[in-house]
Amino acid sequence: YSFKIIEKILKEIENIAIKEDYEFVDANIDQNIVDKNFIDVKIDIIESDKFYVKQINILGNNVTIEDVVRNQFLIDEGDPLNNVLFNKSISQIKSLNIFKKVSTEIIDTDNSVEKEINISVEEKPTGEVSLGAGFGTSGASTMFGIKENNFLGKGIKLDTNLALSEETVKGQFFLVNPNFNNTDRDLIFNLQSSETDRLTDFGYKTNKNAVSVGTNFEYLDDLFLSPRLELNNEKIE
Image (tube, rainbow, N blue to C red):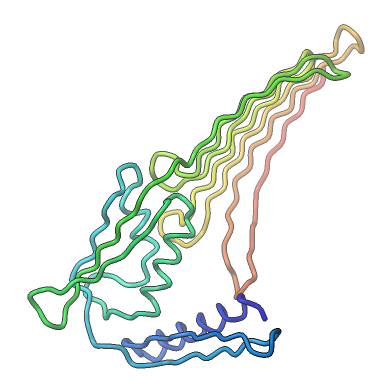
């Protein structure tokens, strides 16, 4: 048994629903354990009630920009209320890992064929600060770092750190902007710099600087590509 295979089946149902314009389709899964180590999986594909989305309201996002949530939706205002796409949209919002809780409510409107969707989110702390110190063969060292999974409320992942020792200084600035410009592609930027000073003991000093820009996207089903361009510069004195 593999839950990933079940997800692939549901994804295929979703693709068929989109391609064939099956606007009002729902899929229910029933799983029962039988004979101790076997599972019966039953998937019911049914035609759901024919409703349209009048409005989508995002509630509780005090820090996160509303577009971060809306970009995960596979249905929009005016579209048919497809339960398969709706449930997948909610799963994608939860997978952002920036909300402690995500709840939904579908309410009636003045029009009998239109529904209003309320998405309530409860934000959670998404950053961390690290500080360390140690002593080894190269002497004393200290480290300071900051990580943030929702930088500026835009769902941007940020990782920056600085390490100092008696001979070396190292720093890194790493940033991932998911779904850059609504392209379903991640924009990845990395900047690194280090300096090692051993002129007194060994007669040399080095400076290294590197910058890279890349992206990450799903080219085919379960096949991801991550092209990257990196420039390096090293100076030895």
